[in-house]
Length: 201
Image (tube, rainbow, N blue to C red; front, side, top):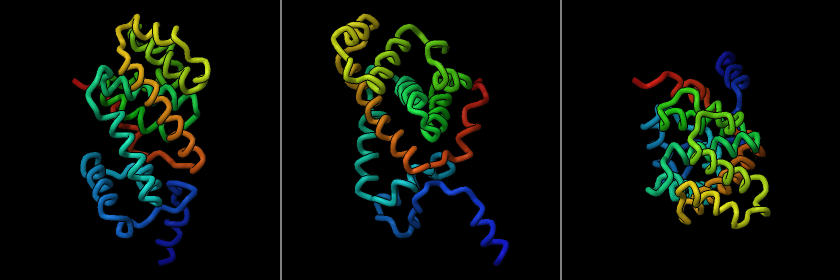
């Protein structure tokens, strides 16, 4: 018993706030978490951390799905590029690591996430993707300066009005997510670090 208690005490916490027991969360929240676990093989810590407040959990992931899972002019990999680049700007450990893993998988590129997180301007991106991230980073850092020249730069690279909305909304949503993850000290799962590191054949 002593060994077990000591191990639990020294394991790193997933957040500064205690996570609820899955048996105690509402059925719909538990089912969402279990579905993610079934797909990935583990439960991302952000799900457990946010399950502490079920209404906010539902709202957060409803907006996440509306932005990140829908069809549109941005590929799923490009959406993840926005998350990784803006999360790097916001020094969000959790989101850079977790979404970096997703980006590597969706882009089928084992190095792209590190490039984008550190300095997307030096990353192996297309001019279109670089324009997308120029806009996203401006939304994340200096949204008050956005004007028609920013939209014209996107249009020149083939982005539509809906694409511009999506880029801005993803950058803004993850600015909130970054701040929550930082304030709550949500720790990335160890599993994320190795995901997508081997090139796909």
